[in-house]
Length: 223
Ligand SMILES: [Fe+2]
Ligand SMILES: [Fe+2]
Image (cartoon, rainbow, N blue to C red; front, side, top):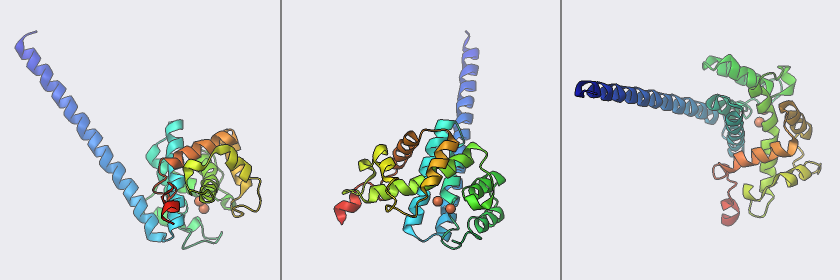
């Protein structure tokens, strides 16, 4: 190979690397902005710390399932993060998540995001058809239930929560009464996953952000 060809090849390689870096850089900026915009929308409407944490927990489960199912992690995560963003302001069944859906439309969110969010509430009549819709429904109540299970542990941490004990707790009707067990069962069935496997998967996803969820054990130590 003569020197001229070698220089040409190096130049082409450098250009390819530069273009690739620019593409990755652009994608990261877009991703960050999208996630940040969604977080701002959530915190604009939701002051409750526990509701924000619920949003983060469902987001974490959705992201983990997107990775497993080959879905768009940013999209699935966003749907999880925003599914209850209007709940604090509009908690009634006539309003939530319909009002939220209108707000999402005004703010330019896609039909796919809005449909998935509408479908998480049984009473809207929006059927859960796509994997993102089925996954949101399957994770929503379960994330709440896992949180409740962690909070009654001595260390108040997700590290102490295991799937078999969560499954057992589901039979205790007096515990976390507001969590609909039938929705958890229906959600896992629709998703086509075995219940205990689904619980373990969501515990694992939530453990990855245990600190943000206040379930890393530090709450018990400082109490
Ligand atoms: Fe909801
Ligand atoms: Fe929810």
